[in-house]
Length: 490
Image (cartoon, rainbow, N blue to C red; front, side):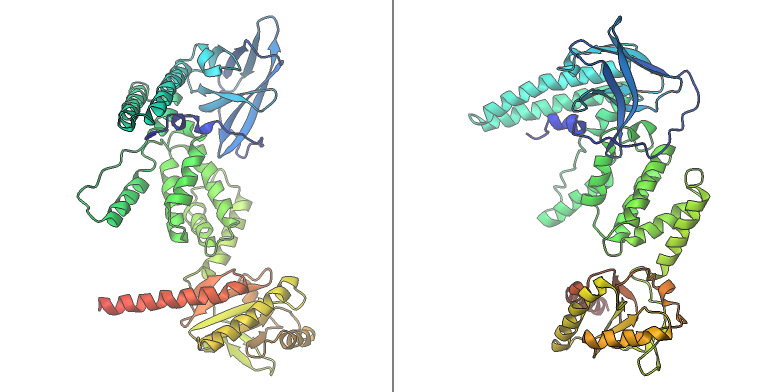
């Protein structure tokens, strides 16, 4: 079906896990909320109220059955933040959604657990009337879609025509609701389900170029129907899905591109303070922990763009702010693309060698400790790598740096290099830490691997030694293509 009707809304109905809230609510004291719910076919005496945010589900209230009235009552003296909330039955394996906006927080609902969207009636909530009527409309159209699907086997042309008609009818309903009720949570949610209208680009005849034009357009307009600056969108099941899709699928997985996507999202979120705070912290944590090569740059850029300039004051405490910036400042000089810090190290004959004295197309820096188990596993791969590149006449040198401190430890370093076959490497140590390499290269654990080019630009890092041959080969091709491109340009 051209526009899957079920996908139009039910994307949020999935199995969920319970979590504690990450960010504190910032509502001011006011008249609060009172939501009464009657479930005519529900046998338990407990009902939960919660919401979905950032791909997780949080429970924030519990109600017990008033046997006299038959209602569950959720009531507190502070308003709920606007958004989509869920009513969770006692078994926690079923729930249904309700809309909560800033103005309508005192209302009553009667429905069934079996058919909550079809059987629901509301008093005091136009927002929920809109949403539940929409759900009933979708339900009726779903039956038409099933009939069209059955028709497809007999008459595919007629089936396609019917699907097109249904698609137009659903979109007309959606846009009519959104335009007439723009400030409702129902409209915010339903608008996010409307597909982007893609231009045909008929003027582009080349298929690949047309596909690229479509991709660029869709990426640019991906959030057209998402009100990122509206606080209500934070507590919905759709926002995290769209952000993940935009960053992980639509964005080239290169640190600069991913950072630009994160920045674009955060800038659009700024009018919604809590949304901005939530996703800034999410992005910062995600890229602080990322194992992808070079993605620490995203963490550094986020810290410098937003924390260093004071844009996170008020929700990141001073101590944490200082720690994050300190860490970002340590990583900044050793990001991929930066010139590697100069260090001078001692060789076994006690002579000094400068990193910048090492002349090679590519230099591999290998920081190790003889008692490091992972170093012992990585060392044979490093030796094998060097044998292979030497056989291929690749211009590569390895500088191995033993991280032991103190002259009494030096014999253990040289013993290790001999036992592991590091004979053709430039083996070094700095027992006095004169070079400050541990600080300059952020060597908090071993092994650490850096790949530098002939200009001592960091081209790769935080990799396994068994990946080195593949990475060097990739860099050689990349550099050859750049030279070829520059030559043609001249």
